[in-house]
Length: 269
Figure: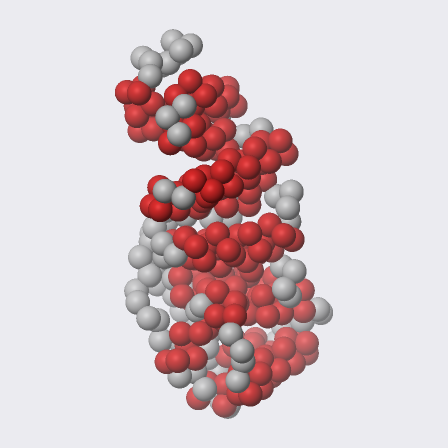
């Protein structure tokens, strides 16, 4: 891609967008992309995505605070678009049509950048990239998945669940996505005590382990049983996790479980 093309695209990829607040790095969901550990925030990579000096556009001038707020809402806030917004989107799509082999390729480009910004702890910037990715291809599961991770890290759990469910409608056999969704649902239950949310989490985890038995999903099934005070069942799931991958066990949770019921198998004291 020529430098001129790159600069043209980057005016969209790094729209003048005042961040509403400094993104604080939080634990990510359990997905392979997001990982399980806290990553340290890093500054934007200089020269990686700069705005063209001649970004002429009405595009840059239109990035008002109000528009910037919409840019970082999941799926642009899912609101009726103004004539100005429609015009901006047409220009953006036309730019991508000229510079990528397909819109799906362009969508993958922006979703990849979104994951990079999540890793950097720049959540608003990531959300905008995923929104652009969705605009290009509403069948790109990464657009919904990434927005779900952003919402989760901002503690917007209802939106996170909604976005991840939209992704699941496209990739209903993705074991990691199912586990991510269940993780958010468990946290939402812990905050709101909505039994239906916990039931949904169990359904999604059961589906995940039916696709591929894995320690993470079994340990979360154990936690669901723990939250229901079914400690024998919690131990059963916990040992299934242990048999798959001992290194994945949460020792803090293990101590909580031991406090409720000694290990029926006598493995843990």
